[in-house]
Length: 358
Ligand SMILES: [Fe+2]
Image 1 (cartoon, rainbow, N blue to C red):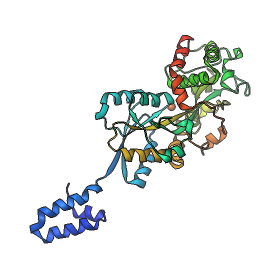
Image 2 (image 1 turned 60 degrees about the vertical axis):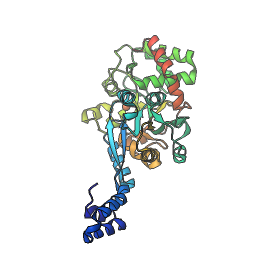
Image 3 (image 1 turned 90 degrees about the vertical axis):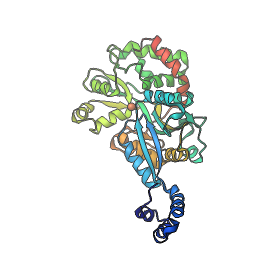
């Protein structure tokens, strides 16, 4: 390590300064003093934590910056999409440089846990800050933000008030009106899993059949294109994550989308299926305590608010502060836990595939 007078002064480390002066004045001790100074300087090396993130939101960087300012721990961010991130971790094994893993959706974070990629964390603070149903019973992952799978309608096509719950989507009166995203996306897989947990396999299967028989258009590739189609009147009803619509309303995806969003109305299903974005400590973590500190920061009321605010997600507790989320009103989450969702995912996919959800 190179030792300059500047770094010694910056460190406010009196011993290092003294040693530096001694080094200048007593040439004979040069070697010894340099060694001693190096030993003293060692703990001053910058601490860091490496994050593999499946959350591709630029605004997360601002939150990491705040964490770094508070703790002096530098955050290095490696972003990748949800699936490839888990694959990458599997491939890297114990050589992985990941300390903290962040993923969206119950299925993805639980897949990472099941693949043995996450180390359990014992933290009183995390247990306090993260409601029980939003964390892993084995403490391998912890929810940070919440998202609701919401119903949207075009009021010129669908009478407002005619849909209040996910169950209503299967009513024959909505034949040809309903549009859905493709089966392979995890968001609808989790919604179906949620309904299986709540209603049981047989009733959930009937529900899926009802939904599919109401769809007469090609299945959509994304929530945003589905919202546009509802706004343009190509579809009467859609099912999307609430934040995509809130962002559109706020003009975050452009003025054209903002105008389209004015023809869309969000219906908060009662009760609502709530999913999370979550974080866990990588099994291969080299910076364990820094990683835990970061997860604790992000799950704290302050951190959860900072993460969810700019993305229009909901924090772990409370209902968000933006104009758009306030207009959505409070929601009534159902009682399904994230780990129950994850356990039911496989069955959900099978039900969807067997009943024509493309
Ligand atoms: Fe998303």
